[in-house]
Length: 305
View (spheres, rainbow, N blue to C red):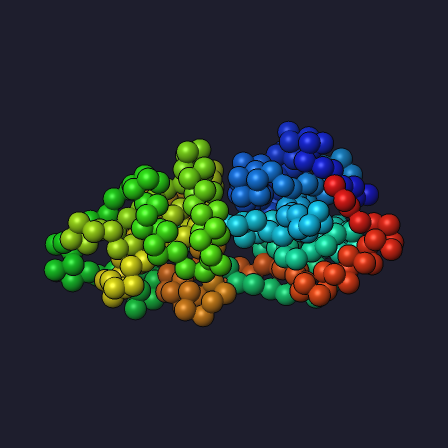
């Protein structure tokens, strides 16, 4: 049996136990991550007594609750001791029958009989760094060999949010407007204060030209953002920063590239020779949402709160 539980009704001890002991565990489903990225606007679907769980983040438009993955939250889905197609299908059916879903992503372990769209992600699993580096493409290895002039005039530093924020805002690509950018920045700031986030900067002639933002979990390092000064792309500072991040933690942590659907980004990530790990996504257009809203109201299944 699947039931819906509002945020204030969640037994977070049971939720955490289920997540931590699940086959599909993802840092992005932890309470801290969801609380920050969604502003605590999420609820939970539960199978029996927390035998399996599915977090449901949402936004509200004109008083209407719409399921939508939060910023920087790539994968959620169903979490259970063993991934079960039968149980996953029950959750998927409950989601589709009872919610307005704009965008919801499952995790790369969730399997379904239903046909669902896939998106690409790339992961490097824990190993000795020399084994990981040996797999890099010849082009990526060349990019990591800085020429003498660049090497003599560059350095890598771990910096604070305050030191990073102006460069990130100036080089943020993909946001709709300034308010959208500021929302991302607020999430970065909160995670940094909670000591989950690290800003690594590549300096050339005492000037920041690249920054990567990495999120640290107990078994994962996730690349939440790469920001580059376009004038210095040929210096390969981003490649150097990512390689350093991999080198520092890959023996004990998964390195999650957090994306790869855009051709140029996918090509860049593939140079590190990660494993392709597709994940499922269900989404609806605005017109489809409106038709679904009418259907839910008529069937008495519309969740107002």
